[in-house]
Length: 109
Length: 117
Picture 1 (cartoon, rainbow over the protein chains, first blue to last red):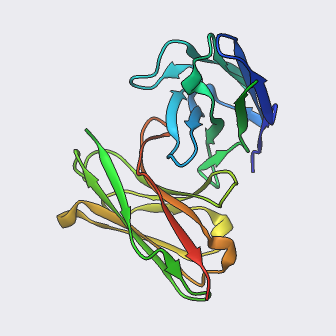
Picture 2: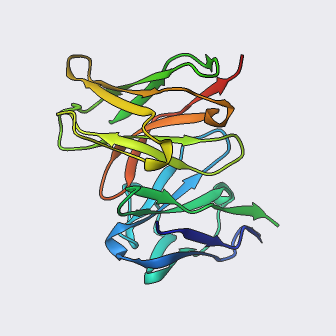
């Protein structure tokens, strides 16, 4: 089973700064099968990025995804107050079909 | 727009069966999509439980060791989750969702199910 490890566990930044979140897979993952989600307290996850770099419907362009193989990155260019949340990467594959990273908490510094 | 809503008992006794339903609106469940259940223990990360297609085909997470069963009711535009022999470890927020492009693109608001006597 492929394991996704996200780093850092917690990222403390200020509004207006740039955030870089990492997701490392224990084996190579096709970029087609890599997605990112945002989750705020008490809310369901929200799909941000699929196919490693394609923004989902309605997602602002300050969110971008990149990467290939075992290393993937979610970048938020200019943090807005509403961006502080937990972020998960997810991979589609085999057994189980969907696996998630453990999450990165983006908190206000 | 696509909306999903989980419903079912919030409290289940140990060793009994958890049963949840996901009502879908804004799109037909017979559309060309798979439908998933995902859960999240309090304060923890996300775990995919399984998925189902409107014709009954399904794939489950092996970690649940055969305790899972999903079904579709096309007449009510909804799908359901059954989890047998629950323990305290099954206490979680349960989400239903629609599968998009190798991801879950629409989510229900989630429902907390507590396993306790």
